[in-house]
Length: 373
Ligand SMILES: Cc1cc2nc3c(=O)[nH]c(=O)nc-3n(C[C@H](O)[C@H](O)[C@H](O)COP(=O)(O)OP(=O)(O)OC[C@H]3O[C@@H](n4cnc5c(N)ncnc54)[C@H](O)[C@@H]3O)c2cc1C
Image 1 (cartoon, rainbow, N blue to C red):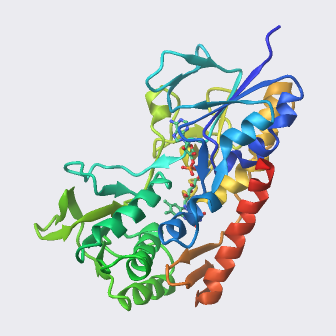
Image 2: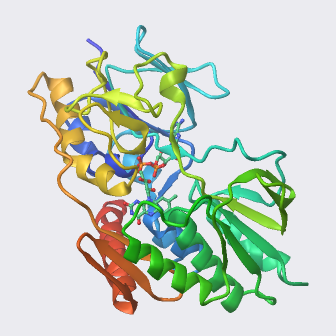
């Protein structure tokens, strides 16, 4: 009888434990295949810091291919386009080859919608995929060599704050001419976090001459300029869009059950609500029990349950439920060696906040990078 096949889509934050323990599957005779469009998975929490040159790319990424192959699994460099649950096949973009699975786990993450981008241009970027932020950094340095450029950050959420702060850092430390930075925040910068976080972030950015444009939404992002809904335009030599994220579109495209946000609809076992052999975690799922914020914290918390349930699905064991847990800690990297620490009701800003984030992030990386050796 052919060995049962476990297929993982994406080596993201919810698959960290499964990847670390991949050899427990191969040792039992199961075939394991991991599909990802890059040989590396980048840790988003440190992405803005890579943009700001606080971290080198190799400090913020996991060598997925190496980890998989070292433990007897197969790594496929590619992007999944669709899942065929009837035939238990995974299809890849630009390929006729379809990969069979007995158990499938999806950690395909999310993407930044580009509906507002009226015409693509070489200097219009989105904040995801994280690896692109290195290209953004190089582009800013090169465009700033001759003159002061205008940079637009579109979006009013935490990633816009971190991106704007770290572009400032690049401009100040590595560019010949510091750029003019504008954040197009929509109605309000940081409308969801506590008011104290918002006022700290506002003060930090505006004290560094970063302009925050509120009460107006961006109508279109065009090469060289930003057009607001009220018709006003602003120059933008380079634009970075951080307008929020949507779960990977592959589930809707495959006719699988999806939640209101388009994420794979999963029950409390992180199991697809109508396919018992499909599981998922991270930004790409829609958790049936309660909506979960699209933060890495939940993906990380899902790790042990996902690992356990994949093994259980292959061996006929009992599934474990996922408990999202209570509130979570977020620390913003403001790009000037300071941060904002927020775990309700504790909120504070300054160098200590950034040092705590740096410590936690480096520890997380070291833990899972250790298995690459
Ligand atoms: C700038 C920024 C900063 C952030 N900072 C924080 C923070 O400090 N703390 C926090 O908790 N959250 C943070 N977040 C949110 C966090 O990024 C996400 O919640 C987290 O990345 C979700 O992890 P994931 O593994 O589900 O998705 P991803 O990190 O998006 O990983 C998905 C993986 O799947 C792969 N993939 C994608 N599509 C396919 C496909 N079709 N086929 C195969 N593979 C595919 C990708 O290459 C990637 O490796 C931040 C987000 C951004 C944008």
